[in-house]
Image 1 (spheres, rainbow, N blue to C red):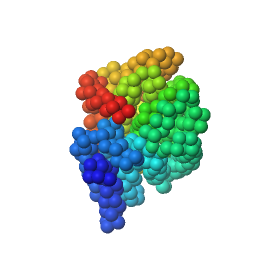
Image 2 (cartoon, rainbow, N blue to C red; image 1 turned 90 degrees about the vertical axis):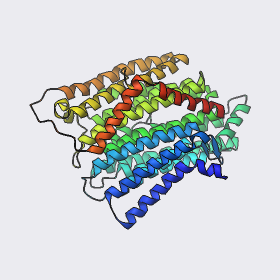
Image 3 (tube, rainbow, N blue to C red; image 1 turned 180 degrees about the vertical axis):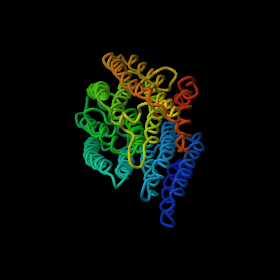
Image 4 (spheres, rainbow, N blue to C red; image 1 turned 120 degrees about the vertical axis):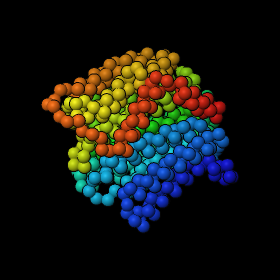
Length: 483
């Protein structure tokens, strides 16, 4: 490894060093504010390191890690999302009983796993990053030890995640047995050299897709999602819905583009069925929910289905357009979902999670600021104009139309209509008149500031997306150059 490769690893090294610093801080003196402060400073330093090495990319750090513009952009997205979740966690846990200094440590290790995942170019780093992320999530989900629901959710996630890891390893073994390669580039060269479809490689890819389908909660691998979303603390739910899924989807896209796995047409047909079921099933199941966290869980299944449509279009259109569509939609989805669960987090107390619809009745009259933010987030999830969600949904429509995926395009239209109904339902509940009550002032200043930033970004990228689009296009063209 030369000096340039070592510098390219600076963001990952900074994250790992910050996790060690938090551990040492806990060993010396337990202090809630100190642990969160060290973690926040470490994430900001990692973001600064990303900005420094951006001009020097791409750098291939051995066969395991590739630090290109694609990896750096997604690392910046994950770290920014992690910083926002850290702010919500501070306000959420500061009044909870017990000691919570280990929480930022677990968030840092989860971010470390996600960062390794998005820059992986080898099955070894792929699996290591995924397991670091998953093991951290087990503990984060069940962090409130004195409550039954988080522990139940953590056990369900643990068992099903173990099954998905078995699928992944078996898929990797089949591909290695046939290709003799674990490096994505080597697998791509093998697939390109074959005139006929290789059944062993196809079987391996299907098993990998099944394993990642669990992490993305695509139907039929979705059964854990509503229970885990409901049981986990609200800020941790936001982390699972954005950082975990975003890292996995970024890895899946890199793998397919790098290895030219789009050549396996039957696999795309399987993806099409999964995407259609996720869009329609997720939206239909969300219609039946009176629990806001379960509703957002089923909504997230549908949104992963929308993303999968743009992903499938890569079999027919340029990889540049696919990367651009998926990246913008993931960024808009992350902003919106963190904001929505951030509102749930602010309304929750150490004793009661604000997940039932009754908590939101008359919210416009009690907490007008929170109600306004939640309304914008829901409208963005629905794809209403002047929000980032609308631009993201437009990208998905364009990708589906360019790829001539007319069946999936119809599913998107139907699913979007269903989604609009249950999002508006929450808004109507918030606007219902209640007996005159005093307006409750904001007390969670960090969460309030975070929600303000997310709201500004949501509207800004919805009205003036060109700056972000230019950055994403440079990332997309950089990835094509790599190929």
